[in-house]
Length: 249
Image (cartoon, rainbow, N blue to C red; front, side, top):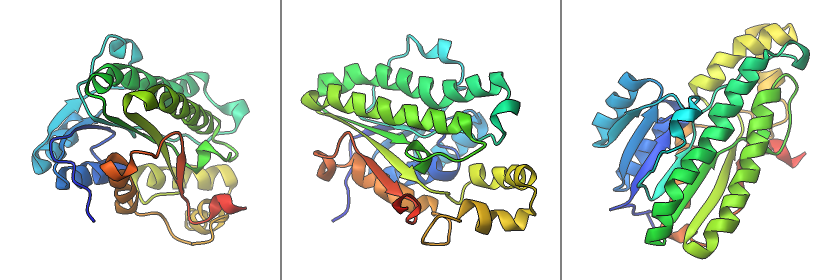
């Protein structure tokens, strides 16, 4: 049975590429009106035009600009994120702060902006794109792991507050996804670990996975689509792993 989102309004951050774009296309294909939010305004406009949605060019790390925001959406997908690989003692403090603003403070502010309308209508879906790094740690990724662990807590708190008022909140926790974010970090991983780039996939990224391949964006989007629909009304406060068995260790 397919998920029908006809009449629903969705906002997907980081929606112009990778996982976000796949979710945008899945939601639009199910009938939702989707706003594509991305720092790359040109790319967001292209994707929005292709799915009959709208674009929002926004730098989510500018959290001061989000504090008075109000969002009129039924489905919020907090997906925007970046990666930076560096030992803690060499990790630039401003980079650390930037990543927490983008991947933890911005989701909080967007949830804060969306909840009043969701409460008024008695319906809402908050999907937080976490990671296997939301429940596990890896060396050299202190900011990313910290942000994702925090997002897991924010999602659970949102679930507890929103549940009585028709709003669910969940985390989606993929392993390594075939996306620009993963492709960009292969060179960083090779440099940090002192190995060739072609060794990174096998010896670093997929070392602990039982299924030795990257997750496809469309697979993540398929799960997001179900979680956004009516059949997931009792799914809240939980985290859905899609990591090829990484976290089974």
